[in-house]
Amino acid sequence: MSSRATPPIGVLLCVAAVAVFAAPTLAFPADAPTGPRLVFAAIGTVLLVLGMIFVRREPAERSAAARAPRGKTIPRSSGKTTER
Image (cartoon, rainbow, N blue to C red; front, side):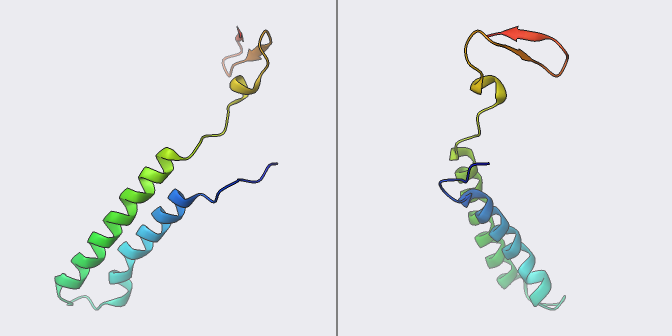
């Protein structure tokens, strides 16, 4: 198995966004003012959007069909084969 050249920054940003979204629930009492909660929601939203942008820009692993040499048949999940 090959190692990744760069860490999955997009996934890490999405995980950080989830942590920021959950922080007010875990840290503040139930009757706390909504102002600080909105700040956490805004920061979490920015992190989530950045994470989604980075995930969309990350290169995808090549599928088995893309790795196969030309002229070889590749079985599909339906049992049929295709000619490349």
